[in-house]
Image (cartoon, helix red, strand yellow):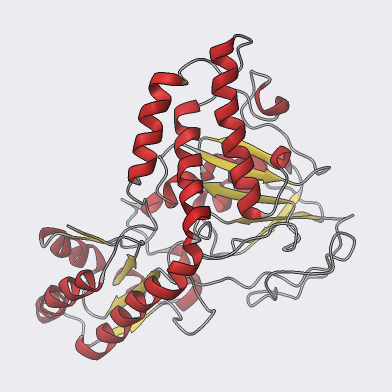
Length: 375
Protein backbone atom coordinates (compact mmCIF):
# COMPACT_ATOMS: atom_id res chain seq x y z
CA UNK A 1 0.00 0.00 0.00
CA UNK A 2 1.14 3.52 -0.84
CA UNK A 3 -0.25 5.63 1.98
CA UNK A 4 -0.50 9.33 1.09
CA UNK A 5 -3.17 10.47 3.54
CA UNK A 6 -1.05 11.51 6.51
CA UNK A 7 -2.90 14.82 6.85
CA UNK A 8 -5.97 12.78 7.80
CA UNK A 9 -4.22 10.34 10.13
CA UNK A 10 -0.64 9.15 10.39
CA UNK A 11 0.01 5.46 11.07
CA UNK A 12 0.96 4.65 14.65
CA UNK A 13 4.72 4.76 15.10
CA UNK A 14 6.35 1.53 16.34
CA UNK A 15 7.59 3.39 19.42
CA UNK A 16 4.04 4.53 20.15
CA UNK A 17 2.59 1.04 19.89
CA UNK A 18 5.25 -0.28 22.28
CA UNK A 19 4.69 2.54 24.77
CA UNK A 20 0.91 2.10 24.75
CA UNK A 21 1.16 -1.66 25.28
CA UNK A 22 3.42 -1.03 28.27
CA UNK A 23 1.00 1.58 29.61
CA UNK A 24 -1.92 -0.85 29.36
CA UNK A 25 -0.07 -3.19 31.71
CA UNK A 26 1.67 -0.74 34.04
CA UNK A 27 -0.33 2.51 34.07
CA UNK A 28 -3.93 1.30 33.95
CA UNK A 29 -5.06 2.98 37.17
CA UNK A 30 -7.15 6.14 37.38
CA UNK A 31 -4.61 8.94 37.30
CA UNK A 32 -6.71 11.05 39.68
CA UNK A 33 -6.55 8.43 42.44
CA UNK A 34 -4.39 8.98 45.52
CA UNK A 35 -2.87 5.49 45.60
CA UNK A 36 0.50 4.54 44.12
CA UNK A 37 -0.81 3.13 40.81
CA UNK A 38 -2.70 6.40 40.32
CA UNK A 39 0.44 8.43 40.98
CA UNK A 40 2.41 6.32 38.51
CA UNK A 41 -0.23 6.98 35.84
CA UNK A 42 -0.22 10.71 36.59
CA UNK A 43 3.57 10.81 36.28
CA UNK A 44 3.25 9.54 32.72
CA UNK A 45 0.65 12.19 31.94
CA UNK A 46 2.85 14.95 33.34
CA UNK A 47 5.78 13.67 31.30
CA UNK A 48 3.77 14.06 28.09
CA UNK A 49 2.64 17.51 29.21
CA UNK A 50 6.26 18.58 29.65
CA UNK A 51 7.26 17.19 26.26
CA UNK A 52 4.56 19.13 24.41
CA UNK A 53 5.38 22.29 26.32
CA UNK A 54 9.04 21.90 25.38
CA UNK A 55 8.21 21.39 21.72
CA UNK A 56 5.96 24.45 21.38
CA UNK A 57 7.75 26.87 23.71
CA UNK A 58 5.13 26.84 26.47
CA UNK A 59 4.99 26.10 30.18
CA UNK A 60 3.65 22.66 31.24
CA UNK A 61 0.81 24.22 33.22
CA UNK A 62 -0.38 25.90 30.02
CA UNK A 63 -1.20 22.51 28.44
CA UNK A 64 -4.62 20.84 28.75
CA UNK A 65 -5.25 17.35 27.39
CA UNK A 66 -8.43 16.81 25.36
CA UNK A 67 -9.97 14.12 23.16
CA UNK A 68 -8.61 15.79 20.03
CA UNK A 69 -8.37 18.95 17.97
CA UNK A 70 -12.13 19.32 17.49
CA UNK A 71 -12.71 19.39 21.25
CA UNK A 72 -9.84 21.83 21.71
CA UNK A 73 -11.25 24.14 19.05
CA UNK A 74 -14.75 23.94 20.50
CA UNK A 75 -13.42 24.71 23.97
CA UNK A 76 -11.84 27.95 22.79
CA UNK A 77 -14.88 29.04 20.80
CA UNK A 78 -17.28 28.24 23.65
CA UNK A 79 -15.19 30.34 26.02
CA UNK A 80 -16.22 33.37 23.98
CA UNK A 81 -19.91 32.51 23.71
CA UNK A 82 -21.91 35.69 23.13
CA UNK A 83 -18.86 37.56 21.81
CA UNK A 84 -18.05 38.24 18.19
CA UNK A 85 -15.51 35.77 16.81
CA UNK A 86 -13.53 36.59 13.69
CA UNK A 87 -12.06 33.77 11.65
CA UNK A 88 -11.13 32.92 8.07
CA UNK A 89 -13.25 31.02 5.53
CA UNK A 90 -10.43 28.46 5.34
CA UNK A 91 -10.79 27.10 8.87
CA UNK A 92 -11.60 23.56 9.91
CA UNK A 93 -15.31 22.76 10.36
CA UNK A 94 -14.81 22.49 14.13
CA UNK A 95 -14.07 26.22 14.16
CA UNK A 96 -16.56 27.39 11.56
CA UNK A 97 -19.53 25.40 12.88
CA UNK A 98 -18.79 26.14 16.53
CA UNK A 99 -18.51 29.85 15.78
CA UNK A 100 -22.01 29.73 14.28
CA UNK A 101 -23.40 28.12 17.44
CA UNK A 102 -21.73 30.47 19.88
CA UNK A 103 -21.92 33.60 17.76
CA UNK A 104 -22.38 37.02 19.35
CA UNK A 105 -23.00 40.57 18.21
CA UNK A 106 -20.44 42.49 20.17
CA UNK A 107 -17.05 43.72 19.01
CA UNK A 108 -14.62 40.89 18.14
CA UNK A 109 -13.19 39.32 21.26
CA UNK A 110 -11.52 36.29 19.68
CA UNK A 111 -9.58 35.96 16.44
CA UNK A 112 -9.07 32.34 15.33
CA UNK A 113 -6.79 31.62 12.36
CA UNK A 114 -5.09 28.31 11.59
CA UNK A 115 -1.42 28.60 10.69
CA UNK A 116 -1.52 26.06 7.85
CA UNK A 117 -4.60 24.76 6.08
CA UNK A 118 -5.45 21.07 6.35
CA UNK A 119 -6.59 20.72 2.71
CA UNK A 120 -4.00 22.75 0.78
CA UNK A 121 -1.16 22.84 3.29
CA UNK A 122 -0.70 26.54 2.60
CA UNK A 123 0.26 28.91 5.38
CA UNK A 124 -2.57 31.31 5.98
CA UNK A 125 -1.74 34.94 6.52
CA UNK A 126 -3.03 36.09 9.89
CA UNK A 127 -4.53 39.53 10.27
CA UNK A 128 -1.95 42.09 11.36
CA UNK A 129 -2.19 42.19 15.12
CA UNK A 130 -0.31 44.44 17.51
CA UNK A 131 1.08 42.04 20.11
CA UNK A 132 3.36 44.56 21.85
CA UNK A 133 1.63 44.33 25.25
CA UNK A 134 2.82 40.70 25.24
CA UNK A 135 5.89 40.24 23.05
CA UNK A 136 7.55 42.34 20.36
CA UNK A 137 8.64 39.35 18.27
CA UNK A 138 6.52 37.10 16.05
CA UNK A 139 7.48 33.85 14.39
CA UNK A 140 5.52 34.50 11.20
CA UNK A 141 4.62 37.77 9.48
CA UNK A 142 0.86 38.09 9.78
CA UNK A 143 -1.28 39.95 7.27
CA UNK A 144 -4.82 39.56 5.99
CA UNK A 145 -5.73 38.58 2.42
CA UNK A 146 -9.50 38.33 2.78
CA UNK A 147 -10.53 41.35 4.83
CA UNK A 148 -9.45 44.59 6.36
CA UNK A 149 -6.09 44.72 8.13
CA UNK A 150 -6.72 44.22 11.81
CA UNK A 151 -5.03 46.17 14.57
CA UNK A 152 -5.89 45.32 18.13
CA UNK A 153 -4.08 44.66 21.39
CA UNK A 154 -4.08 42.00 24.06
CA UNK A 155 -6.22 44.02 26.44
CA UNK A 156 -9.15 43.99 24.01
CA UNK A 157 -8.99 40.65 22.17
CA UNK A 158 -7.42 37.18 22.14
CA UNK A 159 -5.74 35.13 19.41
CA UNK A 160 -6.18 31.39 18.78
CA UNK A 161 -4.54 29.23 16.12
CA UNK A 162 -5.31 25.67 15.09
CA UNK A 163 -1.82 24.17 14.77
CA UNK A 164 -3.00 20.61 14.21
CA UNK A 165 -1.29 20.14 10.84
CA UNK A 166 1.82 22.07 11.82
CA UNK A 167 3.07 20.16 14.86
CA UNK A 168 6.29 18.34 14.03
CA UNK A 169 6.42 19.84 10.52
CA UNK A 170 7.84 23.29 11.31
CA UNK A 171 9.45 24.83 14.42
CA UNK A 172 6.89 26.34 16.80
CA UNK A 173 7.01 28.87 19.62
CA UNK A 174 3.55 29.88 20.81
CA UNK A 175 4.91 32.70 22.96
CA UNK A 176 6.84 34.28 20.11
CA UNK A 177 3.80 33.91 17.88
CA UNK A 178 1.79 35.89 20.40
CA UNK A 179 -0.85 33.19 20.79
CA UNK A 180 -3.31 32.96 23.66
CA UNK A 181 -4.65 29.54 22.59
CA UNK A 182 -3.39 26.80 20.26
CA UNK A 183 -4.78 23.43 19.19
CA UNK A 184 -2.93 20.12 18.70
CA UNK A 185 -3.75 16.48 17.93
CA UNK A 186 -1.73 13.30 18.52
CA UNK A 187 -2.74 11.35 15.44
CA UNK A 188 -1.12 13.76 13.00
CA UNK A 189 2.36 12.88 14.32
CA UNK A 190 2.08 9.10 14.62
CA UNK A 191 0.24 9.10 17.95
CA UNK A 192 -3.18 7.58 18.68
CA UNK A 193 -6.56 8.88 17.60
CA UNK A 194 -8.67 10.33 20.41
CA UNK A 195 -6.01 12.41 22.15
CA UNK A 196 -5.30 16.09 21.67
CA UNK A 197 -4.18 19.14 23.58
CA UNK A 198 -4.97 22.79 24.03
CA UNK A 199 -2.43 25.45 24.88
CA UNK A 200 -3.93 28.14 27.12
CA UNK A 201 -1.68 31.06 27.99
CA UNK A 202 -1.50 31.92 31.67
CA UNK A 203 -4.09 34.50 32.68
CA UNK A 204 -6.46 34.21 29.71
CA UNK A 205 -10.11 33.16 30.15
CA UNK A 206 -11.23 29.57 29.66
CA UNK A 207 -14.68 28.02 30.05
CA UNK A 208 -14.46 24.23 30.41
CA UNK A 209 -16.16 22.40 27.57
CA UNK A 210 -16.18 19.07 29.45
CA UNK A 211 -17.56 19.44 32.96
CA UNK A 212 -18.16 17.00 35.78
CA UNK A 213 -14.71 16.59 37.29
CA UNK A 214 -11.71 18.47 38.66
CA UNK A 215 -9.17 17.07 36.22
CA UNK A 216 -6.72 19.42 34.49
CA UNK A 217 -7.01 21.94 37.34
CA UNK A 218 -10.79 22.07 36.81
CA UNK A 219 -10.31 23.05 33.16
CA UNK A 220 -11.43 19.77 31.57
CA UNK A 221 -13.48 17.13 33.35
CA UNK A 222 -13.33 13.41 32.67
CA UNK A 223 -11.17 10.42 33.55
CA UNK A 224 -7.73 10.68 31.96
CA UNK A 225 -7.06 8.64 28.83
CA UNK A 226 -3.70 7.62 30.25
CA UNK A 227 -2.81 5.05 27.60
CA UNK A 228 -3.62 7.50 24.81
CA UNK A 229 -1.69 10.32 26.48
CA UNK A 230 1.30 8.01 26.89
CA UNK A 231 1.10 7.29 23.16
CA UNK A 232 1.00 11.01 22.47
CA UNK A 233 4.09 11.44 24.62
CA UNK A 234 5.94 8.70 22.78
CA UNK A 235 5.19 10.39 19.44
CA UNK A 236 6.41 13.71 20.86
CA UNK A 237 9.63 12.04 21.98
CA UNK A 238 10.23 10.91 18.40
CA UNK A 239 9.57 14.43 17.09
CA UNK A 240 12.04 15.94 19.56
CA UNK A 241 14.64 13.20 19.17
CA UNK A 242 14.65 13.21 15.38
CA UNK A 243 13.91 16.92 14.89
CA UNK A 244 11.28 15.81 12.39
CA UNK A 245 10.65 19.35 11.12
CA UNK A 246 14.13 19.26 9.56
CA UNK A 247 13.46 15.94 7.86
CA UNK A 248 10.15 17.18 6.51
CA UNK A 249 11.81 20.28 5.11
CA UNK A 250 14.73 18.39 3.58
CA UNK A 251 13.35 15.04 2.48
CA UNK A 252 9.56 15.11 2.36
CA UNK A 253 9.45 18.43 0.55
CA UNK A 254 11.46 16.90 -2.30
CA UNK A 255 8.95 14.07 -2.68
CA UNK A 256 5.99 16.46 -2.61
CA UNK A 257 7.56 18.87 -5.11
CA UNK A 258 8.59 16.07 -7.45
CA UNK A 259 5.02 14.75 -7.49
CA UNK A 260 3.67 18.24 -8.15
CA UNK A 261 5.99 18.87 -11.08
CA UNK A 262 5.32 15.49 -12.64
CA UNK A 263 1.55 15.92 -12.34
CA UNK A 264 1.70 19.23 -14.18
CA UNK A 265 4.02 17.81 -16.84
CA UNK A 266 2.42 14.43 -17.44
CA UNK A 267 -1.32 14.96 -16.90
CA UNK A 268 -3.26 17.30 -19.23
CA UNK A 269 -5.80 19.52 -17.52
CA UNK A 270 -4.04 19.36 -14.15
CA UNK A 271 -3.43 22.32 -11.84
CA UNK A 272 -2.18 22.86 -8.30
CA UNK A 273 -4.19 24.27 -5.43
CA UNK A 274 -1.09 24.30 -3.24
CA UNK A 275 1.61 26.92 -3.68
CA UNK A 276 4.81 24.86 -3.52
CA UNK A 277 7.18 27.81 -3.63
CA UNK A 278 9.54 28.21 -0.69
CA UNK A 279 7.89 29.01 2.66
CA UNK A 280 4.39 29.10 1.13
CA UNK A 281 3.11 25.78 2.46
CA UNK A 282 3.81 22.80 4.66
CA UNK A 283 6.33 20.45 3.04
CA UNK A 284 4.08 17.38 3.05
CA UNK A 285 0.72 18.42 1.54
CA UNK A 286 -0.15 18.75 -2.15
CA UNK A 287 -3.65 19.54 -3.38
CA UNK A 288 -4.14 19.16 -7.13
CA UNK A 289 -7.15 19.38 -9.47
CA UNK A 290 -7.76 17.44 -12.67
CA UNK A 291 -10.19 19.13 -15.02
CA UNK A 292 -13.06 16.97 -16.28
CA UNK A 293 -12.21 14.22 -13.77
CA UNK A 294 -14.27 13.90 -10.59
CA UNK A 295 -12.14 13.77 -7.44
CA UNK A 296 -13.99 10.95 -5.68
CA UNK A 297 -13.72 8.78 -8.78
CA UNK A 298 -9.97 9.39 -8.92
CA UNK A 299 -9.72 8.51 -5.24
CA UNK A 300 -11.59 5.23 -5.70
CA UNK A 301 -9.53 4.21 -8.75
CA UNK A 302 -6.31 4.99 -6.88
CA UNK A 303 -7.54 2.98 -3.91
CA UNK A 304 -8.06 -0.01 -6.19
CA UNK A 305 -4.39 0.36 -7.16
CA UNK A 306 -3.29 0.40 -3.52
CA UNK A 307 -2.80 4.17 -3.31
CA UNK A 308 -4.52 5.95 -0.43
CA UNK A 309 -5.31 9.66 -0.85
CA UNK A 310 -8.09 12.06 0.10
CA UNK A 311 -10.43 14.41 -1.75
CA UNK A 312 -10.03 16.99 1.02
CA UNK A 313 -10.60 17.06 4.74
CA UNK A 314 -11.40 13.64 6.17
CA UNK A 315 -13.86 15.34 8.53
CA UNK A 316 -15.97 16.31 5.52
CA UNK A 317 -16.14 12.80 4.05
CA UNK A 318 -19.60 12.06 2.70
CA UNK A 319 -20.41 15.72 2.14
CA UNK A 320 -21.38 16.25 -1.49
CA UNK A 321 -20.81 19.99 -1.31
CA UNK A 322 -17.56 21.28 -2.82
CA UNK A 323 -14.74 21.93 -0.38
CA UNK A 324 -15.35 25.20 1.46
CA UNK A 325 -11.59 25.71 1.50
CA UNK A 326 -11.16 25.43 -2.26
CA UNK A 327 -14.31 27.46 -2.88
CA UNK A 328 -12.88 30.23 -0.69
CA UNK A 329 -9.55 29.97 -2.50
CA UNK A 330 -10.70 29.59 -6.11
CA UNK A 331 -14.45 30.27 -6.23
CA UNK A 332 -14.65 27.42 -8.76
CA UNK A 333 -16.86 24.44 -7.85
CA UNK A 334 -15.43 22.35 -10.70
CA UNK A 335 -11.91 22.83 -9.39
CA UNK A 336 -13.08 21.88 -5.91
CA UNK A 337 -14.92 18.76 -7.10
CA UNK A 338 -11.92 17.56 -9.14
CA UNK A 339 -9.34 17.92 -6.39
CA UNK A 340 -7.16 15.32 -4.69
CA UNK A 341 -5.05 15.83 -1.57
CA UNK A 342 -1.78 13.93 -1.40
CA UNK A 343 -0.17 14.13 2.04
CA UNK A 344 3.21 12.60 2.81
CA UNK A 345 4.82 11.30 5.97
CA UNK A 346 8.40 10.48 6.91
CA UNK A 347 7.84 6.85 5.89
CA UNK A 348 7.17 7.72 2.24
CA UNK A 349 9.85 7.25 -0.42
CA UNK A 350 10.53 8.08 -4.06
CA UNK A 351 9.01 4.71 -4.95
CA UNK A 352 5.66 5.98 -3.70
CA UNK A 353 5.80 8.88 -6.14
CA UNK A 354 6.67 6.46 -8.93
CA UNK A 355 3.73 4.26 -8.01
CA UNK A 356 1.34 7.22 -8.16
CA UNK A 357 2.64 8.45 -11.49
CA UNK A 358 2.50 4.97 -12.97
CA UNK A 359 -1.27 4.80 -12.54
CA UNK A 360 -2.61 8.34 -12.02
CA UNK A 361 -2.21 9.60 -15.64
CA UNK A 362 -4.23 6.74 -17.11
CA UNK A 363 -6.90 7.03 -14.42
CA UNK A 364 -7.39 10.72 -15.10
CA UNK A 365 -7.32 10.15 -18.87
CA UNK A 366 -10.00 7.46 -18.57
CA UNK A 367 -12.27 9.78 -16.59
CA UNK A 368 -11.65 12.72 -18.90
CA UNK A 369 -12.54 10.65 -21.93
CA UNK A 370 -16.01 9.89 -20.60
CA UNK A 371 -16.62 13.39 -19.24
CA UNK A 372 -18.86 15.93 -20.97
CA UNK A 373 -16.54 18.73 -19.80
CA UNK A 374 -13.85 19.91 -22.20
CA UNK A 375 -10.35 20.20 -20.84
